[in-house]
Structures are given as structure tokens and as C-alpha cells.
Length: 366
Image 1 (cartoon, rainbow, N blue to C red):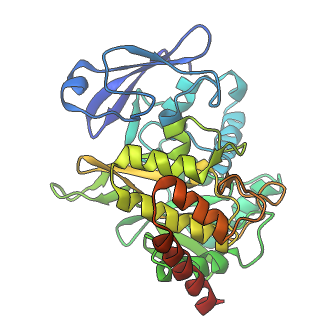
Image 2: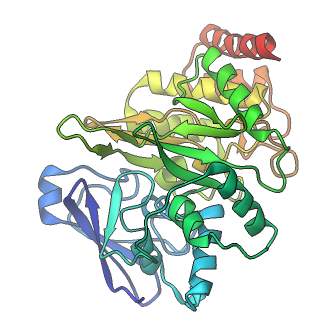
Image 3: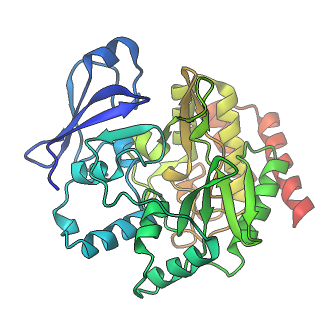
């Protein structure tokens, strides 16, 4: 399964080549044609220049953040590693290049990796209740007879919670299942939070409660193609990938993310959207607000903040927010939000208005 070079592809165009050095660091070079007509896939770390870029060792074990975004995380990686064991492949011997080759064209966002090295080529139909039961077996370290189906539907997903990527009404959806540490009604809780978020003026994707218990999100990295009857992929980059910042260790402040948002989008409306989301996370006690839970989309020639996702009340690490609010991670409130606003140039009156609107949305639903 050893791959030497991968071609990174976006909408059938060759973006560049990816390889690994003898020190197991990723090396990337843009394609000559892409340099003439393309865009930077990661503006802060991979500017559109003719050179060979070498990744840092940390925080992605020698990978670039934008490509690390393509790799399954948590649940998806667990499934892939289970599948590798079944195929008698030693997962620890796989390089980053090998794992990206397994992702191939199935990853989140729009980037694809060739040559592919798919683990199987079967197609499956899904039953959400059955898949949820099989996920529970995996979490309980019990054998599952549906491992191939789980990998097919969830092997490219990120995040810790079990989930599947499905087609519903000819659209792409992510449907989440309960993890062992979740309350039994986690689907209903996330569904309620999505309602509150819309009421608070948060930009949300379409959501749905499948079978009355499984929370689903219509994928915003996919949209109907205007040229064909197929689906068009949208390039997506998390804050984690943009800033090469670990999402496992708290290392960012909302001030950092908001400043990066302006530098990337050059649009203060996007900054205010993220400020509103910060207020939601403060008031809603969503402390799992790490850098992979904020993303940007590149579409129609511009960067913009993605719709919000993973909005649930959570305890966080040691009861603190993964992203600090003006230096406060333990119990931030209005005063901390106002400090952030002052740092990034939002007027005090506007910041208070946004915070109040979010607070009223929670008060009306809880």
C-alpha cells in the first residue's frame, strides 16, 4: 500500500503533487497550470507560489493542515483502522500519503487524491437503525458484521461521534448517532439547539431529525451543479487547517479566529457572523468549540464562513471552552464578549445587541 506521490485534484483540475520527505514530512508543489489559473487552497500556509513547501512536524505529524482536514478523525479513523486489521494491514506502518490515498475522492470538501487506494468497491443500502446498532457494537469493542457498510458510510467522516454520510432526497446528508458518553436524547438536544441557533440569527444548514432521534445536517460542502445534473463539491478549510492549530489542545482565542476571518475573507460581515456564533457558544455552554468546529468555504471566487455545525451543550476539557474568550475559558460572559469586540473593531453597542439577540433566542426556547 506504499504510495510515493499523490496528485491533489479539484473539480478535475490538477492542483499539485504531494509526497513525503525522508523525515516523514509532507512536501507539496502546485501544478504549473494551477499557478496560472487556480487559487491558494490554504492562503496562510500554501500561498500560490512556485516552490516546494515542506510541512512542519507539528501539529499534524508532518502534514499540512489543509490535507489533514481531508483525513478522517475520531470515529472515521477508528473504522478505517478496524478495516485495516481485517485486511491484515498494519495501520501504524501507513504514511500520511497512504491514508490520503485511502480517502481518494470520498473526503469532506472538494479535494481529491489520486491514485486512490480504496479498501473495497462495493455499494450498500442503508438502514439508520441498523447502522446505529452496529456503531454501538464498535464503541463497545464488540465484533460487527457490518464493518464494510460502516466504513462505506462513515469512514471519511470527522469528529468523535459516530456518523454516516448518506443520500436523502437526492441530497448529501450527515446523520449522527449517539456516542457512549452522550445522553440518550442527544439527537433531540442537537435538533433543539439548531432551532435556537436559527432564531438567534446564526447561519445554519438545513437540518432534520431522522427516525425521530438521529440528528442530520445537509452537507454544505456539496451543492447542485449549475452545469450538469451532478453534485458540485465546494472546497472547505477548517480554522484548524487554516492556522495549523491543534484542535486537541486548547491554543486559540476567539480574538485570533476573528482576526483570521477578516484576513481571509476581507468581509466584516463574516467577522460579525462568527462573533454571533461565539456568543451562542458562550450562552449555550458549547465548550467543545475547538478549531475544527469552525470552517470556511471557497465558492464563486471568494472565501466565506461556513454555516455553523456541532452546536450542542458540552462540558469541554476540565470544564473550559476549547477556544478562550479574551483569555477566559472557564466561565466567559458578556464582559468577555465585549473585550473580544473591542479587540476586533465591533462597536460596543453592536456587540451588546448581538449578545442580547442570542440570549433572547435561548430564553424563548428553554
